[in-house]
Amino acid sequence: MRILFLGAPGAGKGTQCKKLSSKCALLHLSSGDLLRDAVKNNTNAGVAAKEFMDKGQLVPDKVLIDLFREKLSQPDCAAKGFILDGFPRNRAQAESLDQLLSELNQSLDIVIDLTTSDSLLEERITGRRVCPNKSCNAVYHVSFSPAKKDGVCDLCGTELSHRSDDKAELVKQRLNVYHELTAPLIDFYGSKNLVVTVNGEGEQEAIFADILKALKVQV
Image: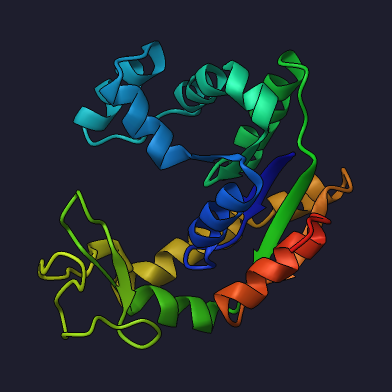
């Protein structure tokens, strides 16, 4: 299976992608993780990306596509299938991805659109707290999954932090960018009869069960 997840920041894409990757033995391809790995491993795309990242600039679409070309060309992607998370984010990237997949004689099988209200997304994101210990990276929420001791990671005892882009003033901006640039991809892929909508509100396990049902995977 070759799956793409769409959904606004805070919709739970990362959580559900990880669960699905484990359940179905699919590669979870997060654009952020791929970037970090490519830079770490000094791949051609990684070297190109690092030049922009070191200057605090956004990595251009062409470099991102080269990054995905490096990964999707590997035999394990062709053999196992994959889940795309966080890419594409706009129409130009989606068209470039289509072209890349065509070059590789691959195509997406399904696009899962995780839908959630903006009010819930804002609550989810602004309440998120993360462990800054890189060997831990645990994630908590002040309401939904709080740490046992307020402000302290259960796993390693590190003081939890509130990411700057999770603060209220920036959350609205991130959601506006999503609605303007990424949400139109629902129609883009809908015209190809690839989109299945899954309600992203509720308990994680119930949402996951709905995703498996959409994919016709036995629970």
